[in-house]
Amino acid sequence: MTASISKAELEEGTDFRPRFDRDGLIACVTVDAGDGAVLMLAHMNAEALRLTLETGIAHYWSRSRQSLWRKGDTSGQTQTVIEIRTDCDQDALLMRVKPGGDGGACHTGRRSCFYRVLRSDDGATRLTLDPI
Image 1 (cartoon, rainbow, N blue to C red):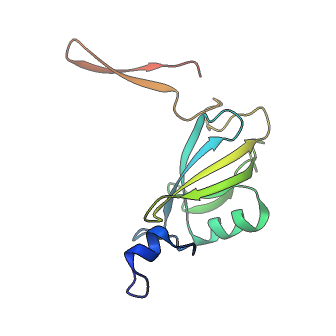
Image 2: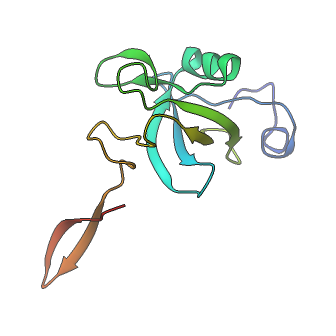
Image 3: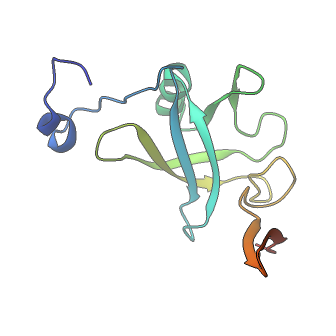
């Protein structure tokens, strides 16, 4: 946190002051505005956030490709932003979107990136598929 803003101002004030991490990124949980389903977790840098705010279309930063991407450019699975919220210390975002295309968000073709359930049975931990 910078010295120019108090904790109270950060947590209770009306100024949007996103706190990017040391890599210049902020986590963004994206949910379907229609039914609240969690679609994905991605990261934004300052440019992705700026473009998202300016265009109303979700933009993210790919950590693996080290590049900016607009959701849907290659997949057709666009995300029109309905609302963006920030958490109490402004280091994470929650974005409510209207999905385009067939409603999918995951690069695997699924609706959600969270399609596996962690189960612990008989001392072994396994992932099972959840048809969401």
